Image (tube, rainbow, N blue to C red; front, side, top):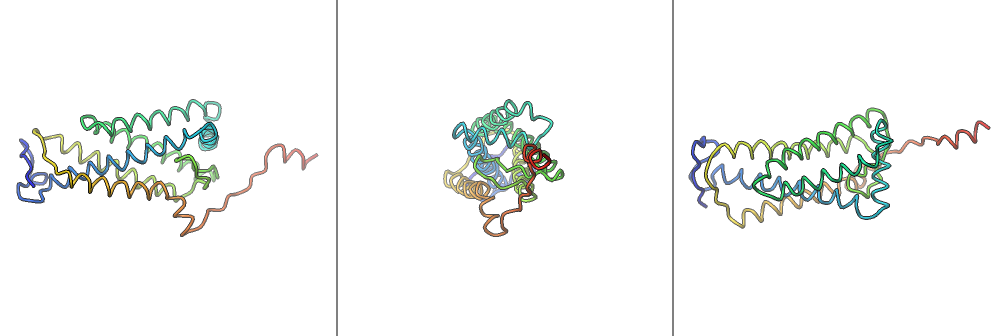
Length: 219
């Protein structure tokens, strides 16, 4: 495989011999883009499968961020809009670096919100992909941390690669392999709750009596 030399490229990124560092990094970034694109597509579509799915996500958003309970509907819609925007950005090579950066920011926001909910002891279900009813927990922080690492690594490598000039040649087989690995990893992310329930068990959901139930008991 041959790769065209870029002006000013340091030896770490470009080695003209076969299996150059630049080859690996090009496919690595492509794989990161594919993984995040699949995750965000499925995340958005899972919340838009029907009125019931969106309503469930809106309720989960209100429980996740109590201070935004009144604005849960526009906030939920904004999250879906942000996910779809990131999908478009990741799909266009010329602006993929923007998509990677936006993915990193949104994932950090998601992680911070989940961490705050776990800290409060909230048992709101994780509706990240629409269908899961597993209560939020440390497992979701770990999953998000993995996605944050993917977005951060992809952003850093992409920005470092943009420091040089000139086109880079890639092989279709390499792109197919990178995309295949990315799709498999994305599938594991999407099935994370089911896999965690299978091997670790479902986290206990604490029962909090409703106000109406409390009033019935006290009267």
